[in-house]
Length: 350
Image (cartoon, rainbow, N blue to C red; front, side, top):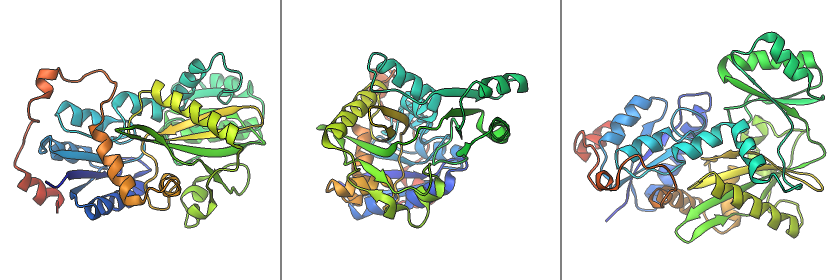
């Protein structure tokens, strides 16, 4: 019996184009593995929910959607779980942590409170609704230069380095209306930036080879990460010594367990001579064949088609989360708003 999937491409935010590109790649990879696949545009969440409601428990929902609005924040997973439909990607709780960089960093600080080798960047979080005077007070308490970036956005969108408090205030005010919260944090240099991908399988979490980067300048910005030469900048394995690599691996696995992660997660980290500095976690990493995670998987001997299938099948793994349904209700079929043939017509399953 062939596996069935509903692939959700993109979210209703500025990162939608990335999902629009990556979603069809994942869908095509699953088809090459013999799956029956339908696709739906994630920028229309009501339509996504209607399509999930038409599914039975024999179809897996596969979000390839970045940022808030359903994918990385775990909202589509919560909807599917409530309807008894298996869904890949983060649970609502893990998704919320991954979206909120300040919250993620606070959790990391708690986990490693007694470990002097692991910390997060020093700085402050500026939130919408704060007075201009209070924002200025918070920012001017931080030593220059500063990295300023949106707290809830990914893909390095809006990230910048500022060397004056006036520039920091200007950038914060430009980001706040759409970002809700903005991080103003120390610029840590010299440091090596790496990414660590963890894929959950039945046999347990697999840690792919770590990825380092060839950067133009101090920060690894959006164009370097996702531009036409992005994959030529990846250094695999990352240029760090084996002892440090093993230490980073154990730190990432500890965080992974603590935030109840399950699926395919990428951890972005800075390394100094004596410190490991987790920056953020991506609960649905980039899934173009040339993105960081697929390159790391390839280095581990996992081709893109296998990676896409493993990500989809992670929907069937047990998750540690507050149950949305009692076991008795979970065993019942999902709410069905029409036969699968209607789904075929609405989103083009084939």
